[in-house]
Image (cartoon, rainbow, N blue to C red; front, side, top):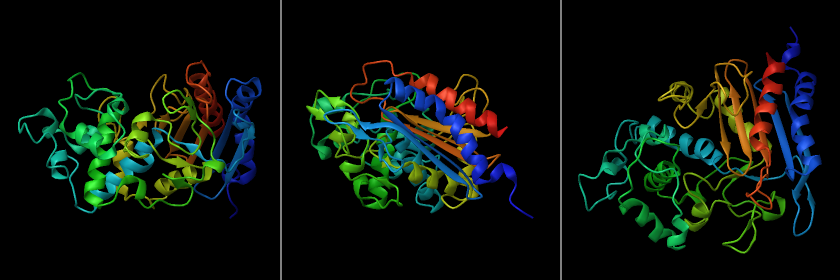
Length: 345
């Protein structure tokens, strides 16, 4: 029997044309510099589309389907969550064990500190008392000292929220357990913590660093921590992101029980690392109940549909040359998600 029509390259190309139209329109208007859309199926069908500019200033550089992007918080799911679940699968740690299993010196001067009771599961699902973000880079740029600061600080308590600090701690745990700095971790083709700047889409003209960021992590805290942290620092191409997503769909990246954890809601709409489809979410209203996804501050996003075997990524450099403007990224993500999921259904 031949390949079903709904899984062919021609079908993928038709869906991509409709799904990419909103991004191409925003790039043409100048609301975002540029974008790349990637769409793929486990059968092998894959299509990429690119539009606009990888860089506006100081000189224009056209966007390419092979452009590398600062993935921002996609680092949390593509790298950090995956690395933690692999360590769990190897029996090195348990999801419900405290972080002190890997980081015994966490809040070492107060054995009763709340941070010492935090578990890997709680951090992955953003169910801790830790704040969402903290300008750690303003305390200095020595990575070793900043890591010590993160571990020994008495963090202000609050209700559970989406927290970079959760994933900074998970990143430190990975470094301790593997014996290698995050920036030196082995990664598959299409993903890197140290990309070629000349092949990257530019992000912000940073007032702190005094230059346009291109091939250097946009996130100030990740930069101060040495260029890579558990919450940000990963770069990738659309092909690299799709390869990762297809690996999850095919059971090649993680075993079935770990993948189930990515799909199972832990609290509200949060799974282990990811976000499950819900009303009003960034993927639009037409995604199926089994879709998970995540976004990145620089303008990136990834969706994975386990029911259909499709995955798609929208990569933009919407913070170039500044984050302090309305790029329309929220509406764009929803429009792309609705167009693709609607066509797939």
